[in-house]
Each structure stands twice: as C-alpha cells, then as structure tokens.
Image 1 (cartoon, rainbow, N blue to C red):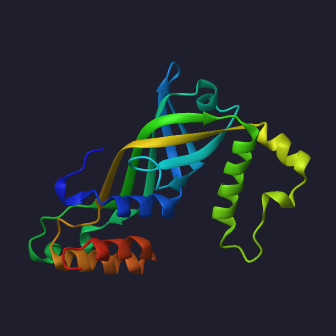
Image 2: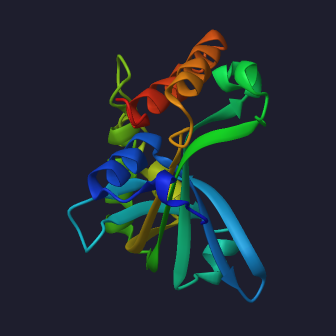
Image 3: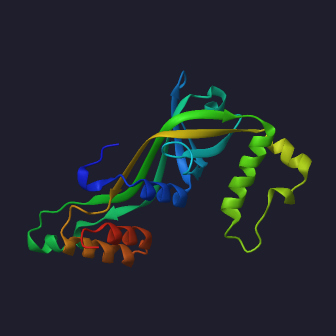
Length: 208
C-alpha cells in the first residue's frame, strides 16, 4: 500500500482499534489458481504474537479454503468518502484544487493456520457470535440452535488464524490540507450525513 508520510498510521493501538471496530475484511491470497479474495468477519486477538492474530472461517466450497494458502493479506476499510474541491476555502482563494477520496485502511499480512478440529472450530463460532450479538437486545447464542444442526453447519466450514507479521495503516484524512480546507470538508461531509468520516478527519487534523 502506497502511504505518503503525512498519511502514515503506525500506532499499534490505533491499528488494532480500527481492525476491531471495522471487524470485516477482504482476505487476499495467491496460489495455483491466481489471486483469490474472500470477504469475511474477523476477530482480533491483539495479545497474541508480535502484532496480533486474526481469526475467522470460510465455506469449505470456497476455492480459497480448498487451496489452503500459507500466507494471506487481510484488508480492513474504514470510513471513506468523496471530497469535493468545492468544499475547500482555497478554491475561492486561487482555484488550484482537485477532487480526492479520503479513507482509513489497514493491511494485515501474515501466516495462516487452518482449523479443522471440531471443538476448536465450535469455539471460534461461539466467539464470533458473542462478538457480533453483543449489541442485540436479546443476543442469539449458538446453543439456541439444535446441536445436530450446528454440527452439520460446522462440517461446511473451515476456520483459520492469521498470525500478523506485517501491519500497515493509512489514514488519508486531509492532513496535507490547510485548516480552512479541512473545516470545509468536515462541514460538507456532515451535510451529507457522513459523520464517521467527518469525525475521523477532525481527530486526524493537525489542529486537533
């Protein structure tokens, strides 16, 4: 990922927080069939390994699962959106402005370990369920479904762990713009309801 210095995010805590919050990634690998990609929810265990471990699962019918690559890249995309040059104060001053796209992205690469053991796979499904049901008024639990049904579902998936060996973050949030341009962009985004990206820009602003 191309990352100019002013957009670099290298704080491990910030990168872990982004991955945990986004929680959904594109898993990319390369093998005999060329480039493969799957879109999967992932759990981060930040305490394991040098940079953390990501856990998830794929359908056994997925070519990526059949291929079982040794290495993969997980791409997390956070708030993103179009930035109109019409929002910049500098447009009115000199007109030398162009459109851009702002976003948060995290790339986590590393070694894969495939999980086929039934007990470990069930534990992974429990953990994913608890993570994503936590905000529900009446959280669903794996134990709410018949045990034989869950056993059948587990036979259709394969789990994996990605031990992160490379971690890279890009916070492209207008840090290279003048304060008035950042303020104009934030106001423009809020006017379109893009509050997540506006909040991220304010937090990343050199004036914050």
